[in-house]
Image 1 (cartoon, one colour):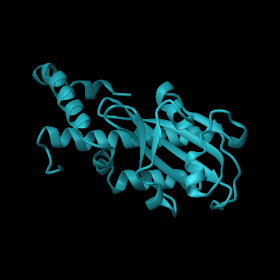
Image 2 (cartoon, helix red, strand yellow):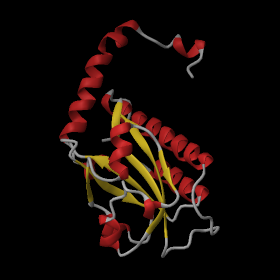
Image 3 (cartoon, one colour):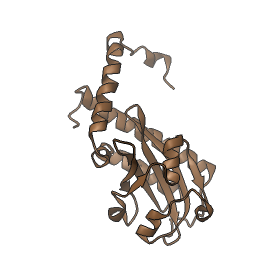
Image 4 (cartoon, helix red, strand yellow):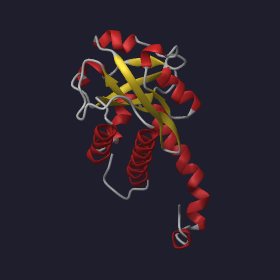
Length: 200
């Protein structure tokens, strides 16, 4: 929540130009591929994600970014041992739980994924692994919904503490980290767009 003193920073002239800034960012985002956009996630943001995945007892976490046509969610970053094989995988929007989280903009948690009718096991088959539990939250930045952060437990991979399944507290943890990552990415974008840093 923004405090009263912080509101004093508002500048009427800058406020009038805010629409132009949002439009400029949207145009820039639309012109890039998911592989380009993942470069906005700096070491600090990725470290936050990795720590959150460990904290909730996940085997790995993935950043999924929508392509410019919003036809697919593309795996652009993964914390697991098979990251190189997973990066670039496209999940059609309209199929699977990850897409549902994107479309409905609501977190999702499933601790018996094998019985879920919404689970698309295409990626499991590609990676020759079996997802047993899944946690996913929407990912926003640049004033819009841009993708999903997911965390899974895998039958073939032991997580750090042997925990089975995710809890409501784990949903809150991943949602908070998604929010913090949004702020970090927005700071990078705004600083660059306004010429306040040498980013980009």
